Amino acid sequence: MATKSKEEVVQEFRIQSIQEATMRVIARKGMAAATMQEIAEEAGVAKGTLYLYFRDRDELVEKTFENAMTQLHDRVDEALLAEAPFEERLRNVIAAKFRFFEENREFFRLYMSLRIPEGSPSQQRRQKRTCQPQYKARIDQLADVLREAMTRGEVREMDPRRLALLLIEGSNAIVIERIMEESAPPLAEDVELIVSALFDGIAARKPKRSTH
Picture 1 (cartoon, helix red, strand yellow):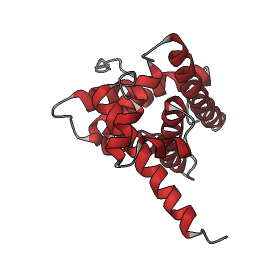
Picture 2: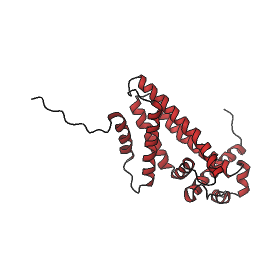
Picture 3: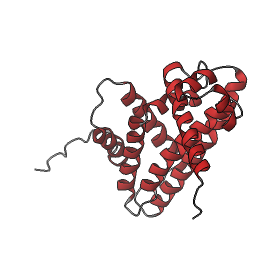
Picture 4: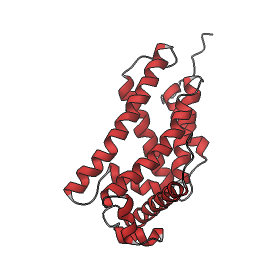
């Protein structure tokens, strides 16, 4: 592996600092109101420094989002692709997702802004282009894993892509609720809620009638 030069290390550190500042500003002010000047002040650099690394604000936001999503996906992939029964992997995937959002609350506002775009029509179109390919890739990957679980008999046969949508959007809804709540229940409880609802269903089981 090639050793990085001092200049490359400094550049990577500066880019990371700028992206972290971008998330904090967006978390406070929202996507549309976050300006390059405010991001520069938050990062402790001159506004012109931002343009050394990013063409404009939209590219800065896109790269910040991509970097954060890479971190999230690395955690989820580690759990999803592990050698373990599907139920255990699903439990670990949901837990990894919940932990990431709780540890990176600044990312939450950025994530929601890209899923539900603000700003001008051109900004909204660009934000959707940033978010949608990532989202589609996650659905497709989970659908593939679900399809394999169905083949092994761990999950009953159904449309794997729609089931992936249900799992992703259901866990997203609980992520939002956990972030917004003043006192969220223990993480393990919400993980178990999703996993048990999937594997056991939600219908109340009536006690079996005695044959005597």
